[in-house]
Amino acid sequence: MTAEHILVVDDEAIARENISWILEEEGYIPTVVESAEKAVEILSDNDYALVITDLMLPGMSGLELLEKVRTSLPTAEVIVITGHATVNTAVKAMQKGAHSYIAKPFDIDELKTQVVKALEQRALSVEVLRLRKLIAQGRQDLPLVGESTPMRNLKKKIAQVAQMNCNVLIQGETGTGKELVARSIHMLSPRSSERFMAINCGTFTAELMDKELFGHEREAFTGASRGQKGILEVADGGTIFFDEIGELPLNMQVKLLRVLQERNFLRVGGTKEIPVDIKVVAATNCNLADEVEAGRFRQDLFYRLNVVTLNVPPLKTLKEDIPVLVGHFLEQYRTKEFSINSISQETLDILMNYSFPGNVRELENIVQRALALAGGTEFTPDLLPSEVYKSAGQTPLRTLEEVEKEHIGKILSAMRGNKTKSAEILGIDRVSLWRKLKKYNME
Image 1 (cartoon, rainbow, N blue to C red):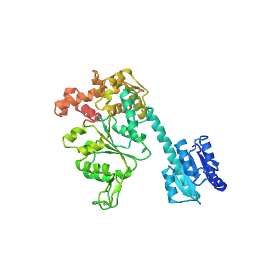
Image 2: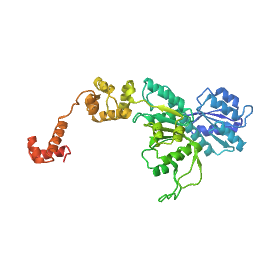
Image 3: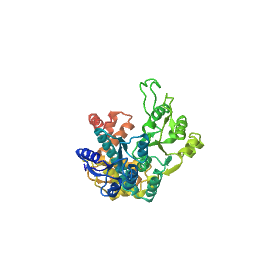
Image 4: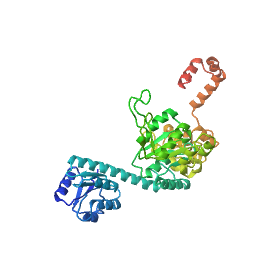
């Protein structure tokens, strides 16, 4: 790993020397200066990962330097060290973006620990920035794959919505990648360094959803020997994705509405309100306005969620993205044992003309199936599922064993399972039939 450059700013020579020695011992590359003015002059000399500065400096103060660093080196972290430790100065430093605040005389181990934590945070910030740039540029190695006009428009809207601290409703057919859209929103948002939690509203009963979402206190119900945090607490500061929000039970809709309105909640069995700061992204494959009309979804919750709506297009409208998606999935799922390096034009033509009722998820499954069945390195038409092959007006090629197994099954069905009569019609003896049934797991 490359040694990180760290800038040390302190007007006391002995303090500068001590910090520099500690940093060098830990493998970092320190640069020391005695004033904030000199620090500003050399900020652009190196891509400093961390700035350690005294708060009380002659001339420009450490807080002023902190503001300069935030502007010039947005990914750099800042640790403030001072002998003038007060609550007010600590609060000011943290409000202006300092990673941490250490009072003199400082403990060496504490300084080492804070440096490590600050650099870990910086690494995360750098990675988030890299991912944001990649998504903004429409690069292929991030969740959303595709360069068609509808996909470019969707990515543009995602980049805009991600910067807004509002609820988002994603609409689209099953398998279109609604969760990937939600993850992209989170990755581009100021909350990207915090947790992204996804919950499928259709997989829980109301009682289980209550416990999963809000958590519970000790002895809140039989078997609750200890308290447990729910998804809301775990995701505090981050993003929660409610998939299939239309399946959320009505009584849970009331509770979620309260969270969105009040920004606090109660654990199951609890009496203390817990504040929560989350971005809510919800997704549905149904028309929530129709569900409201039918009385299956609360109108007030619908309006709360529907601040910004993103519509994810079905794959049948993204034809030009199909070759890119196929290549993406072939690369994603390839292994040393299962690898396809090319796709025949006939296969591609069939896929381009297929309607994909299961959308991107169906295409993903098709590619995984091809990798599992391929005997060579080319994606040929015989690796396609029969329903896809038939959609092109062609009969899929089958092995002799597949034909034989199907024929034996038809004869047995016609003879109502009578093996003696079936063997006679097939022109084989009963022992041979038994062997074939065992071979094809038809016993």
